Structures are given as C-alpha cells and as structure tokens.
Length: 187
Image (cartoon, rainbow, N blue to C red; front, side, top):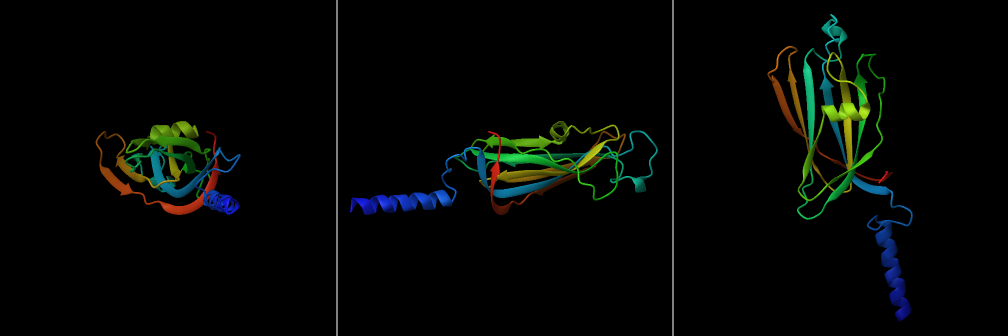
C-alpha cells in the first residue's frame, strides 16, 4: 500500500512539473510565459533635424511624438516577475520601409501586488541607444511577456513642431495574447 502511495505522489509531481507549475532542475533562469503584450510606440521629432525635408519624404508628419506605456499588476496578493524588450521598426535617418531595426535583449521587471510603472520615450531611447528629438525619432514595439495577466495601457500624445501645447491624446488598452513559451532570462 505504501509503495502505491509513493507511485501516486510521484505521478502527481511529474504532472505538476510537466504543466510548468514547478521549475525543473536547472531551469531557474527561465520564465514560463503565458501572456504577450506587444505595444506600439512612436517617440521623437521626425522633422529632418532643422533641414528642409518635404513631408512626403518623412515616415511621420512633422511634429513631436511621445508614447507612455503604463503597466499594472492587477493581483491583490501576488507579485509578478515578467520580461520586456524593445523591437525597433524604424528610426532616423529614414532608410526606407521593411528594414528591420535593433532588438534589445529581454530584461526582467517585477511589480508587487497592485503596483504599476511606466515605460516612456526616454527609457526606450536609453535602452536602444538611439536618439529622440532634434529631428530624430524611433518607432517600434515594446514587448512584455508575463506568466500572469497584466493591465497594459498605451498613452500617445503629439503636438506640432514649435508648439508646447498638446494637440492629440489617445489612450489605448493593450490586450494580451495567450501563448506558452519558456524564456531564458538573466536573473
């Protein structure tokens, strides 16, 4: 009878391990993700850096563009550890469409229960090493991957060049898509 109990406990342990609930030996540097949030961003000033560039040669209309991405852990009792990266789609100087840009490595982030933080254009410029302002811009995606559902909202603002007042504000909730993937990350 005791042998059957050990076998039953062993089988349950293997099922839980296979489901990804428990980490396997040697997998402490991986994260099982279930939710992916790709958030579009536009940052900077695509005005040609003071040079007279016709609008038809610019990838965006002249102006100042800012994106702020708000990330919230909706859990009332559990922290969440997740990863984020930046995938650049276009940058100045504009070299034409369909030229893939820089991809940063995933970095770990953590939010305690009910905490929130923001990812903004200065952070995106910093992690990519690409300038914004003065005629420079960056467009692409911030990608968040998490084992738990998050609240993600993108806030987009824009204004004409030479004007300090906001002229456009758009708030967009970003739905997550479900997927099963193990990511190796540096913890």
